[in-house]
Image 1: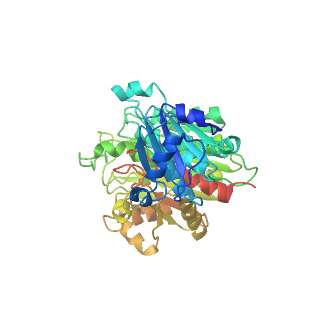
Image 2 (image 1 turned 60 degrees about the horizontal axis):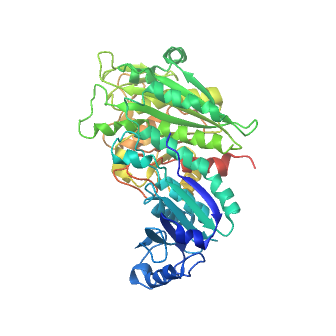
Image 3 (image 1 turned 90 degrees about the horizontal axis):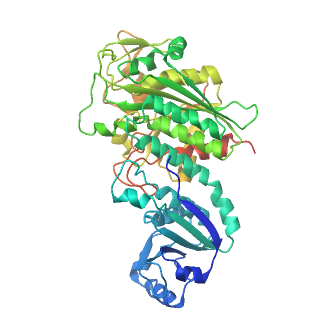
Length: 490
């Protein structure tokens, strides 16, 4: 998998700063008090720059760049504005500003004693992500020289300790991004399952259920989605037991490795992006990786349903009726509303096997949530106000946009079927809500549950603050924060 940039920590050394032949980033407060470590001629240039209107116009986390600074061997000096009392989000943005320009050079960061330097380091790592494994141009040659970052600070040992705690989060985010960015001819259901199984090496317990086992369990809704594909459908169960005898938090992810729409085939334009339709499963996998790497004191089980939705002579048809593991029957109105069929069975299995304290599912479920919220917020639905508020609080703390949308019995009439217990889609009106209403039918009474529709945030059309264009890994930090704050033993 793609690894976060290597970051080292050392004491400030003026001679090394002057001799450094890569990039230098200088963390500065708005008052532009010059830190120690800069050569005299460079200090003069920085002083002049920070007296400019351009510096005064900078927002926290933004930067000015001086090319070929006097008295220094480096080719650029980046002046990063970060207030002394900056927020976590502002500090990560400052790191992202540095991380966006890493390239293959060695970057030196002069952090002084800024109290948010550890968050700057996380921002650098997240924004420095580069999924270039399939590019064979000059970029591949540059990749042979892995980028490096060195932080100079007054207390490098303390900074290394606090920054190191976030390394597990960065690796989990990268794991999720890699999975979502992979093409479907590489990330088949079997390859996906193998990558998850390999996480036994870091302490997870991983179980892979094949089609015969799924059939015995009665997961006919999930199996119907994948019956037109050569890739076998699977359910993977990942367990992290770090919290004693407590009931686990269950995380459930939709893992459609490619979604053509099936017989209700999608338009050709943009179909290439449907490699991301396993985004929910990718997030669950990334969270489980993070929890294992940081040895979380919590019990969490991650379950993902892995299928491929293809048109074939064996594929399910509009008008088919399938029976779920719960026993409810579903009339398939549109084979492109397939993710909810996968989740229905996995949600029921998660509850009946693990008796979880709470269930959170994630899915790139509907285009309707993009119409409602764009690419800035995931849609959150829940039957439990406390769980919903804790998710929103965690998302806000991590700078990942989320917005709660309603559930109500009045929407049930839209998925009422003439022939079966329900339809798998209610049409265009309130499309993301009716999808959530469908899922709620597979949640047991009194079971705290939340559904997060990440269709708009998993693979946005442009770069974000903490990610280059491509997969963002949205949700790994939010759910890790949720575990830390609400499910981890003291």
